[in-house]
Length: 178
Image (cartoon, rainbow, N blue to C red):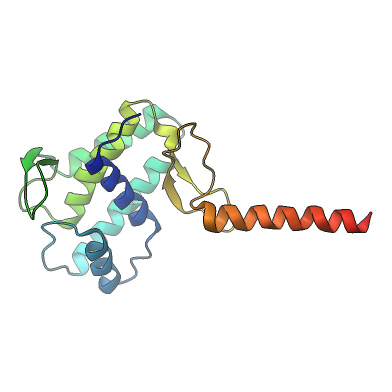
């Protein structure tokens, strides 16, 4: 599966959106700055509420039981954003496609651009790559871009390593008891 740079960035934004606390405007501004989201205007409480609503809709896509359900959810999400594809080369970036309409709110921007990135995965038959970490105390969202679609944890350095170490220690304890 070939994923272009812009789609990969949008997928990273989706997973961060799902994992970010977004409890207040400061956290929303930090999210926007972290991802250098273009066109983000002055943000207010209405933007925060709208972005949280978009996040909830993406969470439904990640939880969709099958491709057909995911496709329906993505279609609704992208349509609600008033998607208007256009080529642009702003801020020193080479030509790329924005899917949000000029003057779109932050929530519409996220729904359109990130929704299209997710749509590309679903259209390629890769809905199962939209995952949640299987570590018992985690549940963070991630996109499994591994070649064999075998990734189970949001991070092999944190959740994966922690569970592997715990399993190793449990085996060691079992050996000392016997």
